Length: 563
Image 1 (spheres, rainbow, N blue to C red):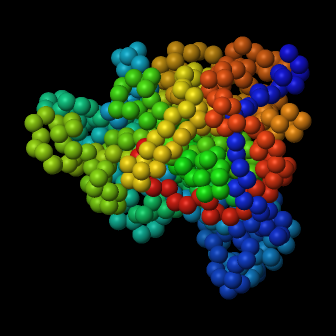
Image 2: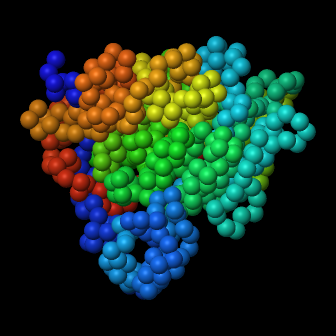
Image 3: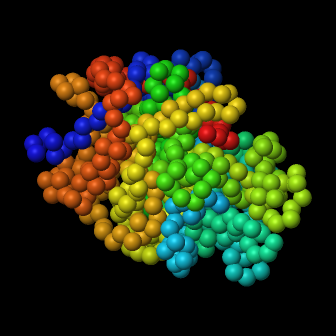
Protein backbone atom coordinates (compact mmCIF):
# COMPACT_ATOMS: atom_id res chain seq x y z
CA UNK A 1 0.00 0.00 0.00
CA UNK A 2 1.38 3.42 -0.96
CA UNK A 3 2.09 6.17 1.52
CA UNK A 4 -0.77 8.14 0.01
CA UNK A 5 -3.10 5.18 0.41
CA UNK A 6 -2.18 5.02 4.07
CA UNK A 7 -3.13 8.63 4.52
CA UNK A 8 -6.44 8.81 2.71
CA UNK A 9 -9.65 6.94 2.22
CA UNK A 10 -11.16 7.21 -1.24
CA UNK A 11 -14.83 8.15 -1.31
CA UNK A 12 -17.11 7.41 -4.22
CA UNK A 13 -20.78 7.74 -4.99
CA UNK A 14 -21.59 11.10 -3.40
CA UNK A 15 -22.55 14.05 -5.56
CA UNK A 16 -22.64 17.44 -3.90
CA UNK A 17 -23.61 20.42 -6.02
CA UNK A 18 -22.54 23.99 -5.52
CA UNK A 19 -24.90 25.68 -3.08
CA UNK A 20 -24.10 29.27 -3.78
CA UNK A 21 -21.12 31.52 -4.28
CA UNK A 22 -19.94 34.23 -1.92
CA UNK A 23 -16.95 35.22 0.11
CA UNK A 24 -16.04 33.58 3.38
CA UNK A 25 -15.54 36.78 5.30
CA UNK A 26 -16.63 40.37 5.20
CA UNK A 27 -15.12 43.21 3.20
CA UNK A 28 -13.00 43.99 6.23
CA UNK A 29 -10.91 40.94 7.14
CA UNK A 30 -11.91 41.23 10.80
CA UNK A 31 -15.66 41.45 10.14
CA UNK A 32 -17.82 38.39 9.53
CA UNK A 33 -19.59 38.44 6.19
CA UNK A 34 -23.05 38.68 7.73
CA UNK A 35 -22.11 42.11 9.12
CA UNK A 36 -22.02 43.56 5.60
CA UNK A 37 -24.61 45.81 3.98
CA UNK A 38 -26.28 46.87 7.22
CA UNK A 39 -28.07 50.17 7.57
CA UNK A 40 -25.57 52.57 9.21
CA UNK A 41 -28.07 53.54 11.88
CA UNK A 42 -28.95 49.96 12.84
CA UNK A 43 -28.01 48.76 16.31
CA UNK A 44 -26.18 45.42 16.10
CA UNK A 45 -25.39 42.88 18.81
CA UNK A 46 -21.88 41.58 18.19
CA UNK A 47 -19.25 39.38 19.78
CA UNK A 48 -15.75 40.82 19.66
CA UNK A 49 -12.78 38.53 20.14
CA UNK A 50 -9.57 40.27 21.15
CA UNK A 51 -5.94 39.28 20.79
CA UNK A 52 -5.70 39.10 24.57
CA UNK A 53 -7.97 38.97 27.62
CA UNK A 54 -10.07 42.17 27.37
CA UNK A 55 -10.03 44.67 30.19
CA UNK A 56 -11.50 48.08 30.90
CA UNK A 57 -9.23 49.74 28.33
CA UNK A 58 -10.62 47.49 25.60
CA UNK A 59 -14.19 48.27 26.60
CA UNK A 60 -13.46 52.01 26.55
CA UNK A 61 -12.03 51.80 23.03
CA UNK A 62 -15.07 49.89 21.83
CA UNK A 63 -17.17 52.53 23.57
CA UNK A 64 -15.50 55.27 21.55
CA UNK A 65 -16.61 53.39 18.42
CA UNK A 66 -20.15 53.55 19.76
CA UNK A 67 -20.27 50.14 21.45
CA UNK A 68 -21.98 49.35 24.75
CA UNK A 69 -20.82 46.33 26.78
CA UNK A 70 -23.49 43.66 27.30
CA UNK A 71 -21.57 40.66 28.63
CA UNK A 72 -17.96 39.66 29.13
CA UNK A 73 -16.93 36.38 27.49
CA UNK A 74 -13.55 35.67 29.01
CA UNK A 75 -13.64 32.04 27.86
CA UNK A 76 -13.02 33.16 24.27
CA UNK A 77 -11.04 36.34 25.05
CA UNK A 78 -14.07 38.35 24.03
CA UNK A 79 -17.14 40.31 25.00
CA UNK A 80 -20.64 40.97 23.68
CA UNK A 81 -21.55 44.54 22.73
CA UNK A 82 -24.32 46.51 21.10
CA UNK A 83 -22.91 48.90 18.50
CA UNK A 84 -24.29 50.99 15.63
CA UNK A 85 -23.48 49.47 12.26
CA UNK A 86 -21.74 52.71 11.34
CA UNK A 87 -19.12 51.97 14.01
CA UNK A 88 -18.19 48.47 12.82
CA UNK A 89 -15.35 49.56 10.54
CA UNK A 90 -13.79 51.63 13.33
CA UNK A 91 -14.19 48.71 15.69
CA UNK A 92 -12.49 46.30 13.27
CA UNK A 93 -9.66 48.77 12.78
CA UNK A 94 -8.65 48.58 16.44
CA UNK A 95 -5.34 46.66 16.65
CA UNK A 96 -6.53 44.85 19.78
CA UNK A 97 -9.48 43.32 17.90
CA UNK A 98 -9.02 39.89 16.35
CA UNK A 99 -12.45 39.17 14.84
CA UNK A 100 -16.04 40.45 15.04
CA UNK A 101 -19.17 38.35 14.50
CA UNK A 102 -22.86 39.00 15.07
CA UNK A 103 -24.23 37.59 18.31
CA UNK A 104 -26.11 35.06 16.22
CA UNK A 105 -29.32 33.33 17.26
CA UNK A 106 -29.26 29.65 18.19
CA UNK A 107 -32.27 27.35 18.23
CA UNK A 108 -33.31 24.10 19.81
CA UNK A 109 -32.85 21.61 17.14
CA UNK A 110 -37.74 6.53 25.46
CA UNK A 111 -39.64 3.42 25.00
CA UNK A 112 -37.78 1.97 22.01
CA UNK A 113 -34.72 4.22 22.13
CA UNK A 114 -33.17 2.85 25.32
CA UNK A 115 -33.28 -0.91 24.53
CA UNK A 116 -32.26 -0.22 20.92
CA UNK A 117 -28.84 1.13 21.93
CA UNK A 118 -28.48 -0.87 25.18
CA UNK A 119 -28.19 -4.65 25.06
CA UNK A 120 -29.35 -6.83 27.95
CA UNK A 121 -25.94 -6.76 29.62
CA UNK A 122 -26.20 -2.97 29.97
CA UNK A 123 -29.86 -3.01 31.05
CA UNK A 124 -29.06 -5.50 33.81
CA UNK A 125 -25.84 -3.79 34.95
CA UNK A 126 -25.44 -1.30 37.79
CA UNK A 127 -24.36 1.48 35.44
CA UNK A 128 -26.85 4.33 35.80
CA UNK A 129 -24.81 7.55 35.70
CA UNK A 130 -24.38 7.81 39.49
CA UNK A 131 -21.92 10.55 40.39
CA UNK A 132 -21.67 12.00 36.87
CA UNK A 133 -22.69 15.62 36.28
CA UNK A 134 -24.14 16.56 32.89
CA UNK A 135 -24.53 20.22 31.95
CA UNK A 136 -27.69 20.71 29.89
CA UNK A 137 -27.37 23.97 27.96
CA UNK A 138 -30.89 24.39 26.66
CA UNK A 139 -34.28 25.99 27.48
CA UNK A 140 -34.18 25.07 31.18
CA UNK A 141 -35.28 22.01 33.17
CA UNK A 142 -38.58 21.71 35.02
CA UNK A 143 -38.05 19.60 38.21
CA UNK A 144 -40.53 16.90 37.15
CA UNK A 145 -40.90 13.67 39.12
CA UNK A 146 -38.76 11.63 36.71
CA UNK A 147 -35.79 13.90 37.50
CA UNK A 148 -35.97 13.43 41.25
CA UNK A 149 -33.66 11.20 43.21
CA UNK A 150 -33.72 9.32 46.48
CA UNK A 151 -35.56 11.04 49.28
CA UNK A 152 -38.79 13.07 49.31
CA UNK A 153 -38.67 15.96 46.88
CA UNK A 154 -34.95 15.65 46.21
CA UNK A 155 -34.14 16.82 42.69
CA UNK A 156 -31.18 15.65 40.62
CA UNK A 157 -31.06 19.10 39.05
CA UNK A 158 -28.28 20.17 41.39
CA UNK A 159 -27.63 23.63 39.95
CA UNK A 160 -29.58 26.01 37.76
CA UNK A 161 -28.78 29.39 36.21
CA UNK A 162 -30.47 31.37 33.46
CA UNK A 163 -28.62 33.34 30.79
CA UNK A 164 -31.86 34.71 29.29
CA UNK A 165 -34.25 37.32 30.68
CA UNK A 166 -38.03 37.43 31.03
CA UNK A 167 -38.60 33.83 32.07
CA UNK A 168 -41.92 32.68 33.50
CA UNK A 169 -40.99 29.20 34.74
CA UNK A 170 -38.06 26.79 34.92
CA UNK A 171 -38.68 25.78 31.28
CA UNK A 172 -41.20 27.88 29.34
CA UNK A 173 -40.38 26.20 26.03
CA UNK A 174 -40.23 22.53 27.12
CA UNK A 175 -37.28 21.39 25.00
CA UNK A 176 -34.72 21.30 27.82
CA UNK A 177 -36.95 19.19 30.08
CA UNK A 178 -37.51 16.73 27.24
CA UNK A 179 -33.74 16.50 26.66
CA UNK A 180 -33.15 16.07 30.40
CA UNK A 181 -35.62 13.17 30.52
CA UNK A 182 -33.83 11.39 27.68
CA UNK A 183 -30.56 11.92 29.53
CA UNK A 184 -31.54 11.07 33.07
CA UNK A 185 -35.26 10.36 33.51
CA UNK A 186 -35.84 7.51 36.00
CA UNK A 187 -39.39 6.66 34.91
CA UNK A 188 -41.05 7.52 38.22
CA UNK A 189 -44.28 8.55 36.47
CA UNK A 190 -44.51 5.35 34.40
CA UNK A 191 -43.20 2.60 36.69
CA UNK A 192 -45.12 -0.18 38.46
CA UNK A 193 -48.81 -0.99 38.34
CA UNK A 194 -50.89 -0.07 36.38
CA UNK A 195 -48.22 0.98 33.84
CA UNK A 196 -47.34 -1.32 30.96
CA UNK A 197 -44.42 0.75 29.60
CA UNK A 198 -41.71 2.66 31.46
CA UNK A 199 -40.05 5.72 29.94
CA UNK A 200 -36.54 5.72 31.37
CA UNK A 201 -33.57 7.81 30.30
CA UNK A 202 -30.06 6.68 29.48
CA UNK A 203 -28.38 7.53 32.82
CA UNK A 204 -31.28 7.62 35.33
CA UNK A 205 -29.18 8.56 38.36
CA UNK A 206 -26.94 11.19 36.80
CA UNK A 207 -26.98 14.74 38.17
CA UNK A 208 -28.05 17.60 35.92
CA UNK A 209 -26.68 21.13 35.78
CA UNK A 210 -29.33 23.36 34.22
CA UNK A 211 -27.78 26.24 32.26
CA UNK A 212 -30.62 27.98 30.48
CA UNK A 213 -29.88 29.80 27.20
CA UNK A 214 -33.13 29.43 25.19
CA UNK A 215 -36.24 31.52 25.85
CA UNK A 216 -39.94 30.66 25.71
CA UNK A 217 -39.79 30.35 21.91
CA UNK A 218 -36.67 28.16 21.87
CA UNK A 219 -34.34 30.96 20.77
CA UNK A 220 -31.08 32.17 22.30
CA UNK A 221 -27.79 33.67 21.18
CA UNK A 222 -24.14 32.78 20.83
CA UNK A 223 -23.20 34.99 23.78
CA UNK A 224 -25.56 33.18 26.12
CA UNK A 225 -24.29 29.76 25.06
CA UNK A 226 -20.67 30.83 25.44
CA UNK A 227 -21.37 32.22 28.91
CA UNK A 228 -23.09 28.96 29.89
CA UNK A 229 -20.16 26.89 28.65
CA UNK A 230 -17.82 29.07 30.69
CA UNK A 231 -19.97 28.49 33.76
CA UNK A 232 -19.91 24.72 33.17
CA UNK A 233 -16.13 24.80 33.13
CA UNK A 234 -16.07 26.84 36.35
CA UNK A 235 -18.43 24.35 38.05
CA UNK A 236 -16.69 21.25 36.68
CA UNK A 237 -15.00 20.13 39.89
CA UNK A 238 -17.85 21.17 42.18
CA UNK A 239 -20.43 18.98 40.42
CA UNK A 240 -18.14 16.55 38.58
CA UNK A 241 -19.35 17.89 35.24
CA UNK A 242 -17.96 15.45 32.67
CA UNK A 243 -20.38 16.11 29.81
CA UNK A 244 -22.00 19.12 28.14
CA UNK A 245 -25.12 18.42 26.07
CA UNK A 246 -25.87 20.94 23.31
CA UNK A 247 -29.13 20.05 21.57
CA UNK A 248 -29.06 23.35 19.70
CA UNK A 249 -27.26 25.03 16.86
CA UNK A 250 -27.27 27.57 14.07
CA UNK A 251 -25.89 27.87 10.53
CA UNK A 252 -22.17 27.91 9.82
CA UNK A 253 -20.97 31.35 8.75
CA UNK A 254 -17.18 31.06 8.93
CA UNK A 255 -14.43 28.54 9.65
CA UNK A 256 -14.69 26.83 13.02
CA UNK A 257 -11.25 28.29 13.70
CA UNK A 258 -12.77 31.80 13.79
CA UNK A 259 -16.24 31.04 15.17
CA UNK A 260 -16.49 32.10 18.86
CA UNK A 261 -19.08 29.38 19.56
CA UNK A 262 -16.68 26.71 18.31
CA UNK A 263 -13.86 28.27 20.31
CA UNK A 264 -15.97 27.89 23.45
CA UNK A 265 -16.73 24.19 22.96
CA UNK A 266 -13.03 23.53 22.35
CA UNK A 267 -12.20 25.22 25.66
CA UNK A 268 -14.61 22.85 27.41
CA UNK A 269 -13.05 19.87 25.62
CA UNK A 270 -9.59 20.99 26.70
CA UNK A 271 -10.89 21.29 30.27
CA UNK A 272 -11.73 17.58 30.23
CA UNK A 273 -15.45 17.85 29.44
CA UNK A 274 -16.93 15.70 26.67
CA UNK A 275 -19.08 17.95 24.47
CA UNK A 276 -21.94 16.32 22.57
CA UNK A 277 -23.72 18.40 19.91
CA UNK A 278 -26.72 17.95 17.60
CA UNK A 279 -25.92 17.72 13.88
CA UNK A 280 -28.97 19.75 12.81
CA UNK A 281 -32.27 18.93 11.09
CA UNK A 282 -31.60 20.07 7.51
CA UNK A 283 -30.95 16.76 5.76
CA UNK A 284 -33.97 17.25 3.50
CA UNK A 285 -32.85 20.64 2.26
CA UNK A 286 -32.29 20.46 -1.48
CA UNK A 287 -32.80 24.15 -2.15
CA UNK A 288 -29.56 24.35 -4.09
CA UNK A 289 -29.32 20.78 -5.37
CA UNK A 290 -27.11 19.65 -2.49
CA UNK A 291 -29.27 16.65 -1.47
CA UNK A 292 -28.97 17.73 2.17
CA UNK A 293 -25.18 17.53 2.26
CA UNK A 294 -23.15 20.41 3.78
CA UNK A 295 -25.95 21.15 6.28
CA UNK A 296 -24.21 20.41 9.62
CA UNK A 297 -24.87 23.26 12.05
CA UNK A 298 -22.50 25.03 14.44
CA UNK A 299 -20.97 24.15 16.83
CA UNK A 300 -21.41 20.60 15.48
CA UNK A 301 -18.95 21.53 12.74
CA UNK A 302 -16.12 21.64 15.26
CA UNK A 303 -13.75 18.65 14.81
CA UNK A 304 -13.23 18.12 18.54
CA UNK A 305 -16.83 17.61 19.66
CA UNK A 306 -19.06 14.55 19.17
CA UNK A 307 -21.66 15.46 16.56
CA UNK A 308 -24.79 13.30 16.49
CA UNK A 309 -27.25 12.50 13.70
CA UNK A 310 -30.68 10.90 14.14
CA UNK A 311 -31.97 7.39 13.41
CA UNK A 312 -35.53 6.01 13.43
CA UNK A 313 -36.11 3.00 15.70
CA UNK A 314 -39.09 1.88 13.56
CA UNK A 315 -40.95 1.27 16.84
CA UNK A 316 -38.99 -1.86 17.64
CA UNK A 317 -36.33 -2.65 20.26
CA UNK A 318 -33.97 -4.21 17.68
CA UNK A 319 -31.57 -2.18 15.58
CA UNK A 320 -31.60 -4.36 12.47
CA UNK A 321 -34.60 -2.56 10.96
CA UNK A 322 -33.59 0.98 11.96
CA UNK A 323 -33.14 3.64 9.28
CA UNK A 324 -31.64 7.11 9.10
CA UNK A 325 -34.05 10.00 9.70
CA UNK A 326 -34.22 11.84 6.40
CA UNK A 327 -34.08 15.25 8.13
CA UNK A 328 -30.77 14.47 9.89
CA UNK A 329 -28.14 16.95 8.65
CA UNK A 330 -25.30 15.61 6.53
CA UNK A 331 -21.66 16.58 6.22
CA UNK A 332 -19.08 17.55 5.42
CA UNK A 333 -19.27 20.86 7.24
CA UNK A 334 -19.49 24.11 5.33
CA UNK A 335 -16.28 26.11 4.89
CA UNK A 336 -13.88 23.56 6.45
CA UNK A 337 -15.30 20.27 5.04
CA UNK A 338 -14.94 18.51 8.41
CA UNK A 339 -16.33 14.96 8.22
CA UNK A 340 -19.54 14.99 10.26
CA UNK A 341 -21.66 13.64 11.91
CA UNK A 342 -19.41 11.47 14.06
CA UNK A 343 -22.11 8.88 14.73
CA UNK A 344 -25.90 8.47 14.82
CA UNK A 345 -28.39 7.50 17.55
CA UNK A 346 -32.17 7.16 17.93
CA UNK A 347 -33.82 10.55 17.56
CA UNK A 348 -37.20 10.09 15.92
CA UNK A 349 -40.48 10.13 17.86
CA UNK A 350 -38.71 9.93 21.21
CA UNK A 351 -40.99 9.97 24.28
CA UNK A 352 -39.68 11.91 27.27
CA UNK A 353 -40.64 14.32 30.04
CA UNK A 354 -42.36 17.66 29.43
CA UNK A 355 -43.40 20.58 31.69
CA UNK A 356 -47.15 20.74 32.27
CA UNK A 357 -47.11 24.34 31.04
CA UNK A 358 -44.82 24.91 28.08
CA UNK A 359 -44.86 26.24 24.52
CA UNK A 360 -44.35 22.84 22.92
CA UNK A 361 -47.07 21.11 24.92
CA UNK A 362 -49.55 23.89 24.14
CA UNK A 363 -48.78 24.25 20.44
CA UNK A 364 -48.13 20.69 19.25
CA UNK A 365 -51.14 18.73 20.43
CA UNK A 366 -50.39 15.96 17.95
CA UNK A 367 -47.21 15.14 19.87
CA UNK A 368 -49.02 14.39 23.12
CA UNK A 369 -48.67 10.75 24.17
CA UNK A 370 -52.00 8.87 24.59
CA UNK A 371 -52.41 7.57 28.14
CA UNK A 372 -53.44 4.22 26.69
CA UNK A 373 -49.94 3.88 25.22
CA UNK A 374 -48.43 3.16 28.62
CA UNK A 375 -51.27 3.03 31.16
CA UNK A 376 -53.47 -0.05 31.43
CA UNK A 377 -57.24 0.53 31.23
CA UNK A 378 -56.80 4.20 30.26
CA UNK A 379 -59.80 5.84 28.65
CA UNK A 380 -59.53 6.54 24.94
CA UNK A 381 -58.75 10.09 23.89
CA UNK A 382 -56.94 11.05 27.09
CA UNK A 383 -53.33 12.23 26.77
CA UNK A 384 -50.43 12.13 29.18
CA UNK A 385 -49.66 15.18 31.35
CA UNK A 386 -46.11 13.89 31.90
CA UNK A 387 -44.71 12.67 28.58
CA UNK A 388 -44.39 14.11 25.09
CA UNK A 389 -43.03 12.92 21.74
CA UNK A 390 -40.38 14.87 19.79
CA UNK A 391 -38.13 14.14 16.82
CA UNK A 392 -34.79 15.56 15.78
CA UNK A 393 -31.05 15.37 16.24
CA UNK A 394 -31.77 17.28 19.47
CA UNK A 395 -33.24 14.03 20.82
CA UNK A 396 -30.39 11.82 19.52
CA UNK A 397 -27.78 14.01 21.22
CA UNK A 398 -28.74 13.26 24.86
CA UNK A 399 -28.79 9.54 24.06
CA UNK A 400 -25.09 9.78 23.19
CA UNK A 401 -24.46 12.04 26.21
CA UNK A 402 -26.12 9.42 28.41
CA UNK A 403 -23.92 6.72 26.90
CA UNK A 404 -20.86 8.83 27.71
CA UNK A 405 -22.08 9.15 31.31
CA UNK A 406 -22.21 5.36 31.68
CA UNK A 407 -18.71 5.04 30.21
CA UNK A 408 -17.36 7.64 32.63
CA UNK A 409 -19.07 6.01 35.59
CA UNK A 410 -17.37 2.74 34.64
CA UNK A 411 -13.98 4.33 33.88
CA UNK A 412 -13.81 7.79 35.49
CA UNK A 413 -10.37 8.64 34.10
CA UNK A 414 -11.37 8.45 30.42
CA UNK A 415 -10.57 11.62 28.46
CA UNK A 416 -13.04 13.26 26.06
CA UNK A 417 -10.95 11.98 23.13
CA UNK A 418 -11.03 8.43 24.48
CA UNK A 419 -14.79 8.60 24.94
CA UNK A 420 -15.28 9.89 21.39
CA UNK A 421 -12.90 7.41 19.77
CA UNK A 422 -14.38 4.43 21.59
CA UNK A 423 -17.96 5.41 20.78
CA UNK A 424 -17.05 5.76 17.11
CA UNK A 425 -15.03 2.59 16.84
CA UNK A 426 -17.67 0.42 18.54
CA UNK A 427 -20.61 1.92 16.65
CA UNK A 428 -22.54 -0.59 14.53
CA UNK A 429 -21.65 -0.30 10.86
CA UNK A 430 -24.32 -2.51 9.27
CA UNK A 431 -26.58 -0.39 7.12
CA UNK A 432 -28.54 -0.80 3.90
CA UNK A 433 -27.06 1.03 0.91
CA UNK A 434 -30.10 3.33 0.66
CA UNK A 435 -33.50 3.98 2.17
CA UNK A 436 -36.50 6.16 1.36
CA UNK A 437 -38.94 8.02 3.58
CA UNK A 438 -42.19 9.77 2.73
CA UNK A 439 -43.35 12.82 4.65
CA UNK A 440 -46.94 12.09 5.70
CA UNK A 441 -47.78 15.78 5.63
CA UNK A 442 -46.50 16.71 2.17
CA UNK A 443 -46.32 13.32 0.48
CA UNK A 444 -42.74 14.07 -0.64
CA UNK A 445 -40.30 11.16 -0.73
CA UNK A 446 -36.66 11.49 0.33
CA UNK A 447 -33.85 9.07 -0.42
CA UNK A 448 -30.87 8.66 1.92
CA UNK A 449 -27.51 7.07 1.11
CA UNK A 450 -25.60 5.50 3.99
CA UNK A 451 -22.20 7.13 3.50
CA UNK A 452 -19.96 8.56 6.19
CA UNK A 453 -21.36 12.06 5.62
CA UNK A 454 -24.78 10.71 6.61
CA UNK A 455 -24.07 8.17 9.39
CA UNK A 456 -20.49 8.99 10.36
CA UNK A 457 -18.73 6.08 12.06
CA UNK A 458 -22.02 4.26 12.58
CA UNK A 459 -24.90 3.63 14.95
CA UNK A 460 -24.39 4.00 18.71
CA UNK A 461 -23.91 0.66 20.52
CA UNK A 462 -23.54 1.30 24.24
CA UNK A 463 -22.98 -2.33 25.15
CA UNK A 464 -20.06 -2.59 22.73
CA UNK A 465 -18.61 0.70 24.00
CA UNK A 466 -18.76 -0.48 27.62
CA UNK A 467 -17.21 -3.86 26.84
CA UNK A 468 -14.35 -2.24 24.94
CA UNK A 469 -11.31 -1.37 27.03
CA UNK A 470 -9.05 0.13 24.36
CA UNK A 471 -7.92 3.68 25.00
CA UNK A 472 -7.09 5.97 22.14
CA UNK A 473 -3.56 7.29 22.72
CA UNK A 474 -4.06 10.50 20.73
CA UNK A 475 -6.64 13.11 19.80
CA UNK A 476 -9.94 12.09 18.21
CA UNK A 477 -10.23 15.10 15.90
CA UNK A 478 -12.71 14.52 13.08
CA UNK A 479 -10.88 14.47 9.73
CA UNK A 480 -11.40 16.75 6.75
CA UNK A 481 -12.66 15.80 3.29
CA UNK A 482 -10.60 16.98 0.33
CA UNK A 483 -10.84 16.65 -3.44
CA UNK A 484 -8.19 15.11 -5.70
CA UNK A 485 -8.57 16.65 -9.18
CA UNK A 486 -6.22 14.07 -10.71
CA UNK A 487 -8.35 11.06 -9.76
CA UNK A 488 -11.67 12.98 -9.43
CA UNK A 489 -12.21 11.47 -6.00
CA UNK A 490 -12.72 12.75 -2.49
CA UNK A 491 -10.49 11.55 0.33
CA UNK A 492 -9.99 12.06 4.05
CA UNK A 493 -7.16 14.10 5.49
CA UNK A 494 -6.53 13.39 9.16
CA UNK A 495 -4.42 15.32 11.61
CA UNK A 496 -0.99 13.82 12.16
CA UNK A 497 -1.72 13.91 15.87
CA UNK A 498 -5.10 12.20 15.59
CA UNK A 499 -5.62 8.57 16.54
CA UNK A 500 -6.89 7.73 13.05
CA UNK A 501 -4.74 10.31 11.35
CA UNK A 502 -1.73 10.22 9.07
CA UNK A 503 0.94 9.22 11.57
CA UNK A 504 2.98 6.17 10.68
CA UNK A 505 2.10 4.46 13.95
CA UNK A 506 -1.68 4.80 13.92
CA UNK A 507 -2.60 5.41 10.30
CA UNK A 508 -2.44 1.71 9.41
CA UNK A 509 -3.11 0.24 12.85
CA UNK A 510 -5.70 -2.53 13.00
CA UNK A 511 -6.98 -1.03 16.23
CA UNK A 512 -7.33 2.66 15.39
CA UNK A 513 -6.84 2.81 11.62
CA UNK A 514 -9.51 4.48 9.54
CA UNK A 515 -11.10 1.21 8.46
CA UNK A 516 -11.64 0.24 12.10
CA UNK A 517 -13.44 3.47 12.89
CA UNK A 518 -15.44 4.08 9.72
CA UNK A 519 -15.85 0.48 8.64
CA UNK A 520 -15.97 -1.04 5.19
CA UNK A 521 -17.50 0.06 1.93
CA UNK A 522 -20.92 -0.76 3.39
CA UNK A 523 -20.77 2.54 5.25
CA UNK A 524 -19.53 4.51 2.30
CA UNK A 525 -22.20 3.53 -0.19
CA UNK A 526 -21.67 2.83 -3.88
CA UNK A 527 -21.58 4.93 -7.01
CA UNK A 528 -24.67 3.25 -8.49
CA UNK A 529 -27.23 5.80 -7.40
CA UNK A 530 -25.16 8.90 -7.97
CA UNK A 531 -23.30 7.99 -11.16
CA UNK A 532 -19.96 9.70 -11.69
CA UNK A 533 -18.15 11.93 -9.23
CA UNK A 534 -17.44 14.59 -11.85
CA UNK A 535 -19.35 17.25 -9.93
CA UNK A 536 -16.85 17.04 -7.10
CA UNK A 537 -14.27 18.46 -9.47
CA UNK A 538 -15.63 21.98 -9.63
CA UNK A 539 -13.21 24.46 -8.16
CA UNK A 540 -16.18 26.41 -6.81
CA UNK A 541 -16.78 23.62 -4.30
CA UNK A 542 -13.30 22.48 -3.35
CA UNK A 543 -10.89 25.02 -4.78
CA UNK A 544 -11.73 27.87 -2.42
CA UNK A 545 -13.64 28.61 0.73
CA UNK A 546 -16.03 30.82 -1.21
CA UNK A 547 -18.93 28.39 -1.01
CA UNK A 548 -21.25 29.73 1.65
CA UNK A 549 -22.43 33.28 1.53
CA UNK A 550 -25.90 33.70 3.00
CA UNK A 551 -28.20 31.94 5.42
CA UNK A 552 -30.99 31.56 2.87
CA UNK A 553 -30.42 27.84 2.44
CA UNK A 554 -30.80 26.96 6.07
CA UNK A 555 -34.37 27.85 6.93
CA UNK A 556 -35.74 26.97 10.34
CA UNK A 557 -35.90 23.47 11.82
CA UNK A 558 -39.29 22.08 12.79
CA UNK A 559 -38.85 20.44 16.17
CA UNK A 560 -41.68 18.05 15.42
CA UNK A 561 -40.37 16.73 12.12
CA UNK A 562 -41.23 13.10 11.57
CA UNK A 563 -39.97 10.64 8.98
